[in-house]
Image (cartoon, rainbow, N blue to C red; front, side):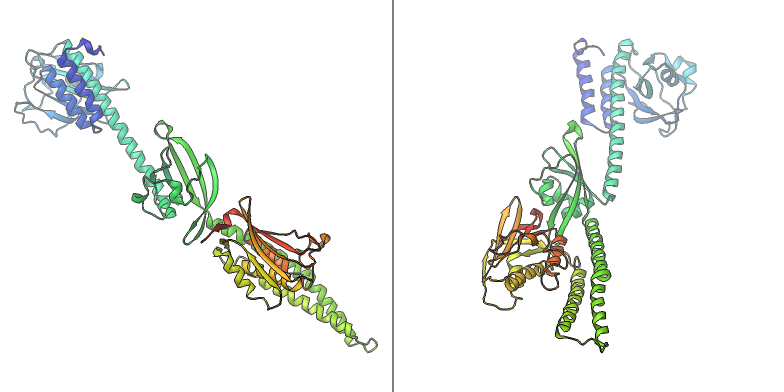
Length: 497
């Protein structure tokens, strides 16, 4: 294309207006009309059209037609076969004009009856990827067309071709967008598009369900804030986290891709609710542990006690071996151990049977202490206001520890309960001022069968806390009292009023 300063002011103005039509209109017909009119007016033609080549390449499909002041009785819906002069222009792939059109029998013979007389005709092909896809046609210019007209018409036809290309690309993009939106809408995972500031530009129906709001309310808002984790940095790749909802805790997995979209300024975030999957995994693990533990109880411990009872039953019927009082004590102890094992089984079956939720820690402590038998020991509480994410058995664990400290702690007259925060975790401390736990016993006090009584209380405490993703240790100084520390992870506690 020649430099703009080589055109006259009228030519430059017309070309600029035609070029502006590319920006002003996304629809090809609107752009083509502006381009056609600027070209027709500049060249002085009185009629013309813009047509596109049919998919089979056999016909021109008229997009817009200007018959000028001429009468034309031809049905505009009739096909416009590619033949005669049109065929020559398509084959030659360049702008051509004929100023004695009506004298050319090889062209006129293809004109249908009632067609306007064409004193002169100019056709400029619309070219995309070096292939003709349509025509810009002009006719009946006073004095006829010349080479300068052909050159100008070529430039206008090129602009029309760009408009057509853009329009087709936009149609394809919109079609692709609709397809992607349809796919996203039908997805079970949250799919959202965020801008560089983390604001929602698009979110699908699954995302609306997870965030608990409508798309109209979410677009333009911060994604992490609406998700319930304000300030969270969405790192590239996969990550897992939990959010709290009124109906309970939701466990999520997020896949994040940065640097997409125009200028790489967008992010695609796909979030999946894995709460059900984690719950199933948790239940399977609990079931496995239950089966394993119960297997040990039934195969080993119960059989041992039955053997003891069977032995003493034989003695009872043996007249040569008299029964002594200590034999009765052994029988009672074995029966108590068996009863304890079956009580443990009942307690163990309850693990995982209730969904965890947020509970006030002080309420749990006070409720657990109220179940203890009255005694003369002093209870001291020094704890902040906290909420604990746990199931109903957490209170039973607290009760068992308190019972050990209040009942079995020899020489103790005080039981203390306190809290402290450390490394993002919350530590619940339950301690007495008795003799404490000997060093050699510290690693075994939470084992099944170890200790006084049935040896199951602290074992069950450990299992209950483990089911709540908590841990327990005993770190008291021997001779100064027992000190049990329950560690609550960061995700399972919060400050409360």
